[in-house]
Length: 454
Length: 134
Image 1 (cartoon, rainbow over the protein chains, first blue to last red):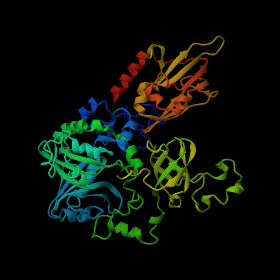
Image 2 (tube, chains in turn cyan, blue):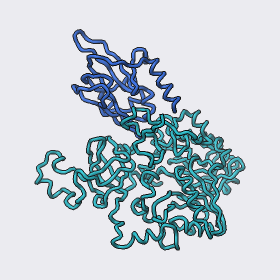
Image 3 (tube, rainbow over the protein chains, first blue to last red):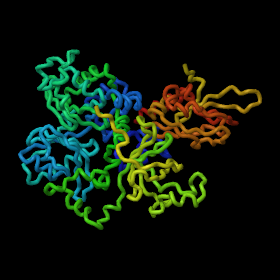
Image 4 (tube, chains in turn purple, green):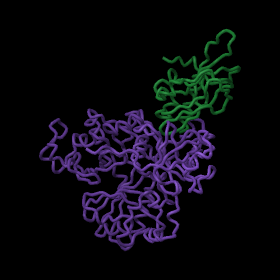
């Protein structure tokens, strides 16, 4: 059986378990996997932990261990540990590394300090999004670019194609690098307590951090490490790169470790974390967590046909720096009359009840009086917002859902979607066709969930 | 413990249990999804079931079982009439995961004729084939 029956079609990433409701698939026939799957260096650990697996961009990765809802809640209330070894680590080094990244990417990477991280975009000349990525500055002339697994080749090729004239090398370190994320309110305490991790500043004070004699909290480098900053550490005598970054909407850390040490590091983190509520968490919970946090996912909210401003990422490109790939198109879009203000834009949507609007579902204007709760036509005239929305008839779509779920934390349906600008204002009502039933959703600001800062 | 020999199965990963018929009443069956199906779906968060009295046709979609990640369709395994739906599952969808053959049952149907269904052994063989094909 080769038909994956994925209703998202070949254009979407194979990043999530296929929807099971496709017409010619019964409940479970949609999980055929392509050949040539890649296994994480942590695969055996996941098998032993009882994980179910999914194909993510050719990688066989844990989708859940037992309950994706429990994993989601654990990250919100305690902590979860994720294997993200499928992500692509691209090293950019050389005297002109900073200048190169300023040209190759949308943001001004030369402006970040050593140790700092920055979210950025790799754009086409037309300002379409090739990938969204996180850039860490490891040194004056040394950067680590972390790209999506699904765009590994595109990001690597895209960067290398732009190196002409720059004294820089782009090295693919993905095969040598495992990535483990610890996310949640207890993440900091767990990474601090894990055996074998030594931080330069804390090494003298805590020769063995595995005991309860934890290093003085006030002096530990992780306590002063700010969000989107990183620090070099050591694990079993080898380099460990620890960043306070993540994709869950919680505090947390991402640990880049040599592949050979992935299993012991995972086990040391789990041992330190279990008393603090840490559970292994799969990609299913990662997706619901990032969606609550309003973070875009490439292949859903972002793509080659998406421009940064459409996706709410208008502040990522830096037009105050010099030339960069995509600049001319962005400047053209900024001209009056360019039409760039008429394209659909990314919004957050919230619904009532329990039925989620899912990716690819079509969005329509608000329910009209005829479809309402039996109100007479005349009484709705002054409240109907569709009076100014000429495209908001009942039959022509005004948008498409890109991601949606019944929010585990909030208890109501949330979705991200591209809609016509006329419907993009917070408070606007729209309807979504959910497998034949039109349900009302309301536009809201992102994120849906924001953690309480301590 | 579930006595699997008392259950029949469909290729759509549903189970069907014949209920003892009261004198003169039409035969009836209780229907749910298998543990394999529940496990593949992940945590079930929403269940939409047909109301009592609704006529259902063999093979048609009569309900939905929705997890955080996917939507599974409930297929009618027989021609018949809904005698009852499990309201407890609508209120607590997690019962489908925690007790798919017990408290996680979905609908009870009165029918006149039962189509060919799979035995437990045949269903296990089907699962083996599906896993092998992946």
